[in-house]
Image (cartoon, rainbow, N blue to C red; front, side, top):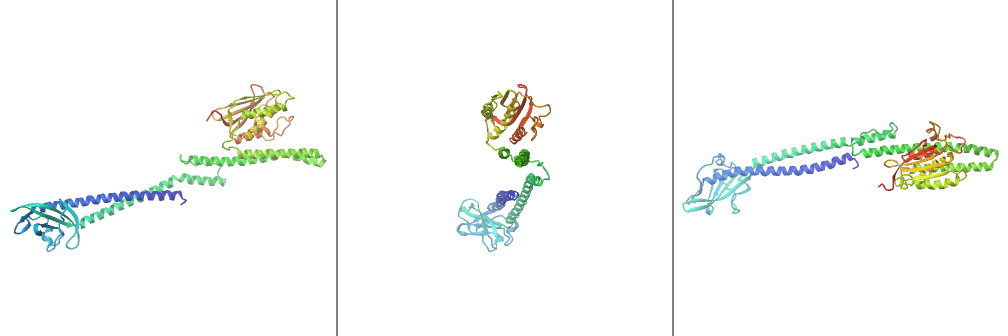
Length: 447
């Protein structure tokens, strides 16, 4: 059974049926015992009346010395009977028994005995009997007193009660199941609304889910919304990669065409190598986009920055660039180490390119769950208001310097993949540009 509504309704119906069935049986049995006890109490009062009027005559045997108030005992086969059994089997009976007799008395147990018997017309009857000692002329004489009445009224009362109780519990159970079914339908309404909004998102009729989810499914709706955003970001990243690749390939292809037309084989080979590097570069970007947010991926930015600084010192040895790396050795960034190397490499290479003599890299924790890496140089910095333009793909603010204009844009794109961001501002210590990279992470001591 795949329907959650049907499953909950079925289980609820079975549970209600079992619970109410047991309760109904308990109530009916309790009431039946009470009705039987009340009927036996009325019959016991008749038995006491017969005992009070019983006597024994040695010549005539047992007899009833006073008439009973109930006239049914005088009407033949009325269903109300009494019978006295004395020594030697001598008997005295009510006029209503006519020529019939009640079943023989039981010999045990002592006291009042109650049992169901068949009457003179095989009708079901309730009978009470009791052994008593009657004072006679010759002393105390044992006599068994029996009184019987029909069970018809008692059985009818029990049947009516049983029918009423069963009907009441059946209606109660039906009402409970109906209410539970309505509650289930109402309770699952947010799920149906979520499904409807997902269809609308898939068909492009809405961008986000606006369902107000209860606490129990709010995490599910949040994860679905996050998945939608992640898929949208993946598509946007794919478009960005295609745009980056198209922009990067345009110039080398044009140069390659000119080199081939002019017969410059060496130039053509150089441009072919450039094209290969660009393709590999953007393949790595696509891989980074696929790995962004991978659980467990961590890197140590200080160690990566120190390794990059060692390589850049060799490349800039002729210019005498001093590169310093300081900060938290225990900082961990939740990103792939190759991507962190790509981001820091671009920032530090730019700092060395535009710096005059110094580059400073600082790694520190910034608030809860954030790691900041600042790369500062002592160069001219950015013109006022150009920080946003510098992050655009293919934009080069200084045409005198070599490059494709993609470095900062790639860093910004990679940072956004991991839930971070890149900001550019004027430095206060060295006076040049400060590239501030903020990414999710932690200190090694944090658990």
